[in-house]
Length: 235
Length: 235
DNA sequence: AAGTGGTCTAGACCACGAC
DNA sequence: TCGTGGTCTAGACCACTTC
Image (cartoon, rainbow over all chains, first blue to last red; front, side, top):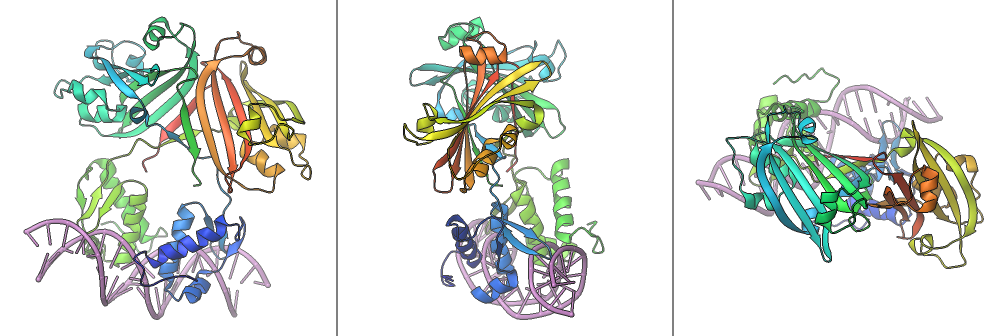
């Protein structure tokens, strides 16, 4: 009922806030029906489109579910959808170990759908935490003669950014696969660990609109130290 | 221009589809300005709210970005936001190894914010793939005398579901931490692996609205075999 | 000043669900 | 039949950007 028409914040937003507060405080519980749109119009003395705009915000945010002919109801929080915090480049210092053009070999060859004589840009980087190296990073991009890339740009770019620098094709989808395996000898040395020790492996593939893969990367993180975090999103 | 007023699909949706198609086909490219709302009203011979509803859909989906006073522009796909496919229960066969009430010990004690004499429901499960066990699962819920739980329900529930079964408090947020470590002896035996071998560890905490943790779990996955997958969401 | 998107109004007709 | 949410109209005023 505390809606101000003079406020800079839009009326529909104030209405949404007020209902969200009631849900957060437990005054409205999952399954409860909220007042009808017509009722809310009368309560707040606003037009229906304004009420609907507010309810729409809450529906998108996962707080409300609407049922045509029945009403609008408080929704149960959905914890199945998780988003990964994948901002590694901001969390660690990055050291560029190598950036070169080479003939592609497995496993990049098959992941990128290339032939055995095709060439790729190969980038190798080390992530440094407070107490030494925490992860090793290898990325492969199909080599494109016409589009040179600056080493300086490669040092701090993530895979989608790299792909975009080097091709005209727009990256539109990214896939991750995460698993654990033992450190290989070369990896162990770079990470100052024992070979055979546990490592977190993150494989990333970036695709163009056409479905064609335009970048592939493996990140090998030191066990225990290197962590991924994910949080649920209500909707 | 192929908008049908007789169609069952709403006009705003048809408009959104048409613009989305142009973007997907590359006819409109990131950074391009699309016709103004007023222009689209004239083109499609509809009211402005209808046009705006359509544009709003595309903005939510990440295809468009609006700039007050300037115009509406095609957005660059955002690949930073990743959603995890965490539907383990549907992918593997699950075997309930134990379900009992016990006095809480570390690490569950501190994760759940309990005292050393509090009790928890402890659930231990094994995930079975085609070729034997792939993961071991331990979950802890603060014990609530008044709310008994059936073993049968525990076998196939995920952590948020368990928490909801056993408390009146609603789970509203879930956090995951993912890393690699060496298998402990008991874990290795259950998974039929060598102790010290690589394991993918997923720790999950579920919180109530109050911020209080109401469930904690660890999943230990066999290296190489047990994998998590994540996909980018455009918005 | 002219054009843009952001907000809001006061109506309208419709499909759907419950009674 | 009545109340519900879903769609749509034809205006209006505003803040902001560009010229």
